[in-house]
Structure formats: C-alpha cells, structure tokens
Length: 466
Image 1 (cartoon, rainbow, N blue to C red):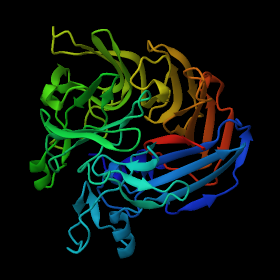
Image 2 (cartoon, helix red, strand yellow; image 1 turned 180 degrees about the horizontal axis):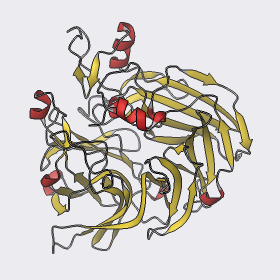
Image 3 (cartoon, rainbow, N blue to C red; image 1 turned 60 degrees about the vertical axis):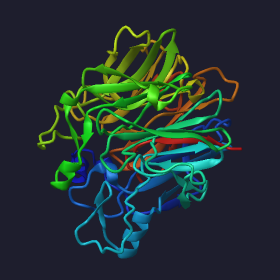
C-alpha cells in the first residue's frame, strides 16, 4: 500500500491540517442562489498524529461543514472524536498504525477500537451519520458536529457498515452492507435495510468468494449487487507484517446479484475480467438486464501486489465504464464497456433517480494535459455516457466530489447545482464552488472563500434546511 508520506509528496493537499476552526461570515464571489439553503457536510482523513508507513485511508476523520442560507455562507470543521482519536489526544501521540492495528508501544489498557469514521456522511431518518466501512455508523449532532456515539439501531445491527449505503428515493429505505462481517480479513458480508422511519427491517450475512475490500455496492429498484473484486484481504499477510490488503488479479472479478425480495441464499455470482471499482455512479433495470455505471480501473489504485511491487500507474486510474448483466440465465459473465477515456472518480447523480434510469451524471476528472493524476475538473454526462459538459480548473488546483443539489423537490432531473470544494494551489487555501449543474462548462457561478485549505478528502452530502 502507498503510505501517507509518499502520497503527500505527490499530492500536497492530502496532508492534514492541525486545527479546528469556525468562520461565521465568509467572503463570496458571484452570488449564491437564494434557493440554496442548507449545509454541505464533507468527510475525509485528517490524521491527528503522523504515523510512518500509515495508509492515507486510515487517517482520523474530520468533518467540514459549509452552511449556506439567504445568500450568506459560514464554515466549521471538527475532528470526529472517536474512541481512537480521544485516546491519542489524551496521550499526546499516535497509538494506532491503521486498520485497527495498535503500535508496539501502546499500553494494553488503551481501547481496541481503532475506528476513524472518515469516509462519508449521510442524513437518513433524522440521523446525521459519519461512516467508514470498518465500524458501525457514528452519529453526529448537526450544526455543532459533536459526536454522540455509535448508532446500532437499538442493537439491531452489528459489525462493519459500508460508507456507501443506498437510499431508495421511492420508499426512503436505506440499504447497507458490511464486509469482514465475521471478523478482520474474512470473506463474510452482511446485508441489511433501515426503513424511512429509522427501524431495521432485515439483517443477514453470507459468504463471498474470497475476502475483499468491498467499498461500494449497487442497488436498483428490485435487485442488490455485491462486487467482490481482487483487492484481497489476508490475515496471513497481516500476521507476517505485510500489507493486509493487496492486489491479486488472479482471483478474478465477481459480482453477486440478489433480488431485493429474496435472501442472500439466492445470490447468483457473475464473473468478468479482473478490475477494481471504488465507486458506482448509478444502476437501473432494463427489461431482463441490469445496467450499472461505475468508475473502473484495470488495476487497483493505491494498493500494491502481495510482494510489495506496485500496480501499473497507467492501468490504475479509473474511467467511466458500463457493466451489463443478463438475468435470463444464458450466461454467468457480465460485460464491461468503457464509455470515456478520461480518468476520473467520485461519480454522482441526482439522488432522486438513484437505482432508476437516470439522464444526468457528474464526476470529478483529471486534466489529461498534466503529468500527475489529480482531480481537477468536472464532467457532465447523459444517460448514454455522452459528455454534456466538461470544465477544468487552473493547472495545479484540485476539486472534491461534486454533490448535486436539486433546485426544489418538483424540479426536473438535473435541474439544480453542483457544490464542490476546490483547493487553490497557488494560494494554498480552498473555495466552495457552486456550479449550474446543467452548464458546468461555464465554470462556478459563485465561490465561497476560505482563508485556509480543506485537505482533499472523500465524500459528502447536502442536507437541506428544514
């Protein structure tokens, strides 16, 4: 795995910031839409203490909240005070080396909970939840960003919980899964559902073909799909002091397809050429087929082979790709068709079309003219994968996941804005950029200016004002 020092040297805005801050009145260029009232919550790794050799993925979670209302903007950031963060804060030094591993000089009395809650933050059934795929959801108090504890829905769920649950726009139901469900580096996966009122309605477990880092999954109106792709987990490697996760393409790519009305006993496993997908844009049913749009890499980014050798950097950048599954029973293979050659990540749609046929999608993209891979623009695509718009930042600047916000509950699909955090390399600080979602090529219609930088992170979501 690539460690934090190596990544920071190549991507300076991945380095952490050492402070928490409040900025109640931020300067704005342009004009914020008056209908844009709510908060963009953003999550990402921000290690409290340096740990030599630690992977970027395991840094302490820090929340960044941009609140927009009545044309004004404010900002607040806070570390998520997990048991790990609190123990290290009290000790004044690092105690964990990542993936739950304690450092050799850590006292036995220190908590065994190495959770960092650093990957996503969602709002469902009245709860604001910070997520990372190794632990239960962490409940956050809106506004203050205070951690109130783990959310296990009154004991109805246990074990890992994905950072990418899916919320059905028709029913309000939230579907989730968790890998390593039988313990670290095991092939068991859990699956469950929470209804629109916040009650768990199902929770079950099943065995995957092998232990894998399953970052995202796929949900349509009537099906759930579980990608098991060859970033493999190995307790044997971990016990030998080697990387617990590594790229093993010989394991092959599997996707399990399950009917939402069925159970995990009914999963049918489809196969394809080895690849890795961190993120799914959207998926839907088309007669006897399932169509899923994903960001696919030929080889895994950010992870090495089991012997420590790196993957090919030219094959380990994700591109917009369409998976097709034939449910007629004629084949156990699914097809993979690249729709664009541009490198990119963090795909999003209008969430009102999640799991349904969608005609608009967006993702953060790289600038092909620059030698170093970094997300520095936005692509807008239609339901067939055709580009509808393409915007690139000035050379050196980077952009976060573009989050769609609808103009109103009755607005047509794609009618609204994209909000994304931009790092200005020359000034070493960040802006919140607001784009017209239908015209990204025009560039931001408004910029909210921060006096410091927001490190490049993972995911966020918009929560509208009540």
